[in-house]
Image (cartoon, rainbow, N blue to C red; front, side, top):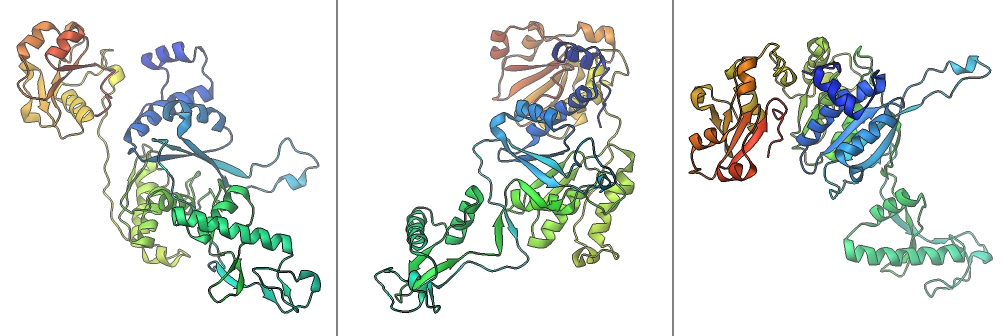
Length: 456
């Protein structure tokens, strides 16, 4: 659950320094809403994880620099263009202000620039693998007869003219060297080269039976570029205005999550397309991928969760047979309670109780379950994780809160460390120099700003 109100004191202060505008534009507000969410999503990514952001032409010029700043420009992998449905209303006019927009974008970033992508292929409707066929033809053309592989026929003809044939022979010799070094198949070699250069390579060889053959390329797979005009970005299974295509998200899931054991997070779940796509991918390849959907709007039960229920159990009216029968799977549905707003901690508005804030900061900082029975409020101790002893200096009273600080007296009361664990201390202020923090093995986290402290 989040607050999009950029007029809060903390946000206004940040905007005054960074944006430096009194009257925020729509783009500024949107970026201010996106920045903290994208930063958090980056932290949640696995080391080899990827994030995909669907965006239209109105915001891509603003979003791209923001993603570059958060993920690093070296982690931008692709800007994929995906076809969108357009209303053909321009035909009735002699001139128009601009061309109809026929595509949207999916920005793709990694967390680690060294991670390689699986190849992405598109299965064609008419399929056939690459094969070898005889290079000799019965048509009698003297101009197409020449000495090749030591053979100089007196009738018939070779399939290609001499220059092309010799180049094809050289291409195959170059492939054999690459195959020796990498083990790549000829089909893959052909498709990679086609993808990179848009050039269809010819290959000619002499087989074990002394027959000259030429290579017939595969038709079952076409390597994809960043042009995905073969599918639409729009979905049409619900009444949701900006529903995304299951085909689009399923392509991404199957491509980036080939092991079938990954976790896919959608923090703007909308109509629930991501859950549908994950379930469809699992049904297709018997995978065990899991999904997490996050949605704050009130349609989450009637649209988002309801769609997931239906695709699991089956949709009798669906054209797709698998969807009619149901894709199987399960999911759990949770509704968050009243959130604690860290921005309001020092404002005196609705300060949480000590136990409430202790639960919040302990789990946020450690990721481990909070145990209320371990609270030792006189000592400010709120629990112990695998890495830390955690302390919280806090009172739900504004005047008392402002007087609390991490001091030498507090550190001495803790005593010298007797275990390898460090002390993680949340407090409004710190009066200890770095030498004492190291001596007592203390890490300081300021309230309220370090509540969202990154986990180790």
